[in-house]
Length: 174
Image 1 (tube, rainbow, N blue to C red):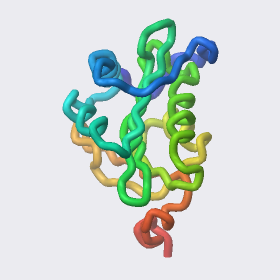
Image 2 (cartoon, one colour; image 1 turned 45 degrees about the horizontal axis):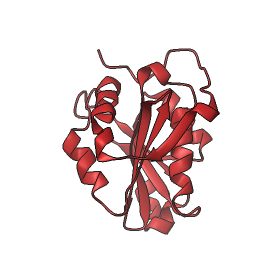
Image 3 (cartoon, rainbow, N blue to C red; image 1 turned 180 degrees about the vertical axis):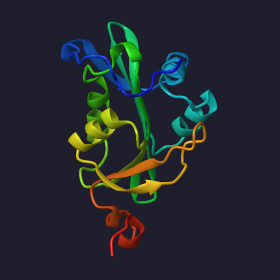
Image 4 (tube, rainbow, N blue to C red; image 1 turned 120 degrees about the horizontal axis):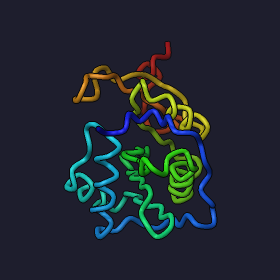
């Protein structure tokens, strides 16, 4: 059964010296897709990864621990904002800091002031807490966003959504 995404295991920190973060390569896709299928009830297909990787504006990274891919991130630019499209860590390596390291490294490759958005399952409290620690703030909901169970997605932003052309009323501001 796929992991609930709730990260019930106790936290443990991977040795930062032993986690290598590098560019995502097409040869990494079997390992990435394996993690994807063990992480999500509505996983991306290999073709979805290939599509995002083919875009010049995509930042794709993997984190390796003990010589094996332990996580990945896909961050793509759309118009004036970046979208954190996908991030996951192998269920056996969760809560070790790898996910945060991947996100921080990806953010180091884009402009500091560039706005970044994402959607996350409203029930995924550990992920929401991680995103909040990384500077994201809730900005609305997408009703019935996830096709597997109709769950809402929480929309989050890091930076100023107005810089991406998102009007305040779209964020629930009056």
